[in-house]
Amino acid sequence: MAGTITLRKSAAGTPVRLATGESTAVRWLLIGISLTFLTLFLFLPLAAVFVEAFRKGVGAYLQSFNDPAAYAAIRLTLLVTAIALPLNLVFGLAASWAIGKFEFRGKQLLITLIDLPFAVSPVISGLIYVLLYGIHGWFGPWLAERGIQVIFAVPGIVLATIFVTFPFIAREVIPLMQEQGTEEEQAAITLGASGWQTFFRVTLPNVKWAVLYGVILCNARAMGEFGAVSVVSGHIRGKTNTMPLHVEILYNEYNFVAAFAVASLLALLALVTLVLKSLIEWRTRVQHDQEEPS
Amino acid sequence: MAIRIKQPSVLPGFGLTLGYTIFYLSVIVLIPLSAMFIRAGSLGLGELWEVITSPRVLAAYKLTFGASLVGALLNAVFGFLVAWVLVRYTFPGKRIVDAAVDLPFAMPTAVSGIALVAVYSPSGWIGRYLEPLGIKAAYTPLGVTIALTFIGLPFVVRTLQPALEDLEAEVEEAAASLGATRWQTLRYVIIPTVLPAMLTGFTLAFARAVGEYGSVVFISGNLPMKTEIVPLLIITKLEQYDYAGATALGATMLVISFAILLTINVLQWWSTRHKRGA
Image (tube, rainbow over all chains, first blue to last red; front, side, top):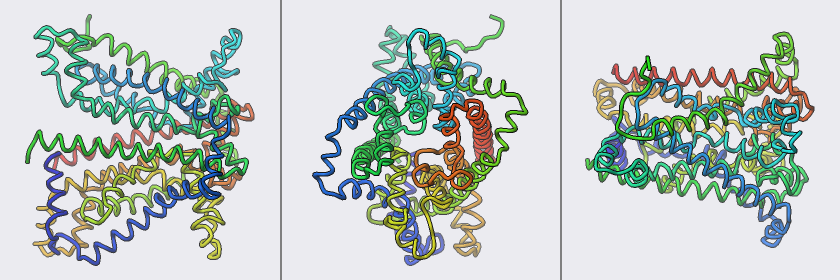
């Protein structure tokens, strides 16, 4: 890790020789093409969200939030995230402890299965729960008899959200725990620490940045998930609409300012996520450099 | 115990954590996914075949895979360029650009969807200049391709960046001292070395694009036979209570996704072996 960073620094810092670099003109041409491409595909759409939200002024923007349905959508999104995130956090820590600290058969298969939700289309992530808990699903009639509604209700939205964010924390923490080995934990146990003490005082501090990184990504996806939630939500205004679904409804009603206003909150969340993500990446890089000075 | 599953360790908690992992994985992922396959299996081959070969479904497959392929190819080319520029050159705002590459990951897909319409619709920021040229971006297959390119970009850039950083300067110097032009070095030395990473990124972008829903539905216009993607067709079938049709489509899509995932794993295995051999 440290080596590659040094390479990057020297490549950037020293004047480039033509034999193994490009002339200034070519360099700026390539930078120009890249930036044009990124502007067309990334920066313009991002700017469009905020410009469209404020198209009719700050007053109209703020007025968009003076709507009980918008509040209900924000509340539901926060609620769903507040359930899905801790569950996936506990799972991520349990999975990484089992996989990172022990050797057992079938480990590679288990890691592949944990990554599985990433390969599944969001729409299918919703569909599978409809097939299980919907009225025509396996458990549907049984649940209906007891008056429990999962699909087109909050539990279905929570399940679909858990599914799409399932691997986020686990996949950040597992490789790190594997890399760090078990020496420190063995020492702690030998010195008389209990399993929980070892985990909270030795293991967790070592992986805290990876955990935080996973939590941030998991949070962004949980709040922003659209496809999977759309399938199981039933789109009941004020009841089962999360923020992204509320954006869709407003947009389809040609209420563009309100749609982009709610969207701007989600875009802001995305930006904060990117900043935090970059900060953590920068921090771990600095830490790495300090540990292995080059 | 005839077969020892776990190697001995002094650390506690193996049974608890592995047990919980498998339980949670089963409840959330494995049981629901297998439920879909069991239901698709109970349809019978005839019915399954009928669903997945109806003209409307075939048109949706053609659009989904075609647009995903074009998007992934665009990303392979421009993603390489972006990764190259970010690894090799310095320019003002580089760190912001580097962080912004992840925007399609972080941005909720519905937000990306309506934002892309605002930019590419006939009255949009760029769309209004394309319209006089006779190019209709939004509500056409081109619009679908634009959305799928947007969504796939980070995959290619993020898999190529470390590969480009790992390139050893000596190899390029050797090529140059043997009389290779810069272009020849790129063509015969650099690209072959980062090809496994490029293919992995391409495949990841393609896989993501095939299943994508949120960023596409707004810009596509959703005309059956013309601009309807497979994930939308699944939702349409669900809304019409055609559970059999939705299941059949979902199961075939998933089989294809798994095949793609398998390809990625083979590619990664191939590239690590490649590296070790070198």
